Amino acid sequence: MRCLAERANVSGEVMQVVAIATDFSVWDTCVLYRTRWSIESTFASLKVRGFDLERTGITRPDRLERLFGLVILAWVSCLRVGVWLQAQIPVKVKAHGRPAMSLVRYGAEQLCHALRWNLPELPELIRLLSTPFHAPGAA
Image (cartoon, rainbow, N blue to C red; front, side, top):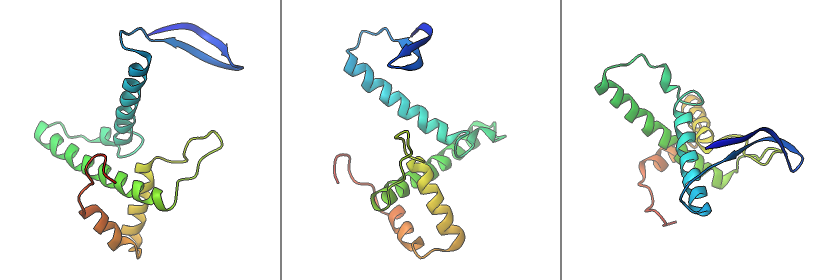
């Protein structure tokens, strides 16, 4: 990757201009970058912007592996609840066009409220989390 200009005026906005040299097609490069961004966002939600996994003092590999497994289970549970909730009550979209919060955060907030206050939807959430995922591509 190479920065072509410190600041450039692009369509009336001041931006950094970045070029990527690759032997992939433009479409394949976009698909790969989108996948990479998804992975980066996932790790960010596991770290500072979510589960705060970085603050653990655990250094033993076996214990760290167990902790990481539990955090991943919690993350997937929050995502599942967020996706389910999004289908019923969509997350608000801000003026810049992006959602006000991630689906993981949406699910985490719902789970926390349901567990803390014993909300009536708690049994439904537990049922949701105990059912298997659909096969990829199935609805």
